[in-house]
Length: 256
Image (cartoon, rainbow, N blue to C red; front, side, top):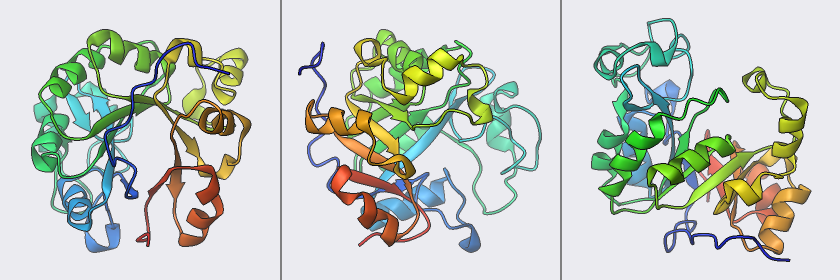
C-alpha cells in the first residue's frame, strides 16, 4: 500500500513536545485563547503552538478561531465583516490583548517553537486568504505547518505557493452545524479520508474521541503519516490515545 504522492516531512523534532491548543490560555488568569499572552505562555513552557486563522474583510490573516465575534469580543457579527485594523481595535471581554495577525505571531514566535496554523473554513469555496498566507509563510524560517478541516483549503494553500507541510483535521462525525453546507457524500468522504488522493495531506489531526479510527490508523501504520489528536483536556485522555498518535494538541492542563 502506497500513497499516490510523496508527503513532506514535518520539521525536525516538530512533535517532540505537546502542542498548546490556541496557545497556553487560561481564562481564569486573564489569558485568552489565540492571543499574544497565550502564545508567550506556550513559548515559555516550551510547547508547540496551535492557532486559528480567519480572514478579515480586507484579506488579512487574523489569528482568531470563531466565525462570529460575539463569544470573545464586545462586538457582534461576522469576523470577516471588518477590516484588519478594525478587528485589531476590538476589545476582548477578558484579558488585556487584542486580536493579532499571523505576521505578528510569526514575529513573536521567531522560530522558538513549532507553529501549527489551522486555516478555518465555512466550506463555501472562498479560498482567497490562501494567497495572503502563502506570502507570509515565505518569509518565516521557523518550524511551521498548516492544517484545515477543508481539503479545498489545503489544495488552495498549495496552489498559492505554500511549501510547508499541510495536514487534514478530521473526525468521524460531521453533523455539527459548521458542516451544514456539506452534502452527505462530502461528509462521508471527510470521515473516511476519501479525499487523500486530491488533498495529499502530510499529516493527520484527528478528534481524540474518535480514536482509534480506521482512517488515521491506516495513514499512520501503513502510510507513515504522523497523527496528532485534538483536543486533549486531561492527563487521562492523553494516556488513552497515546498508542494511536504521535503527539497531542491540549488545553486546560499541563502535560507531563
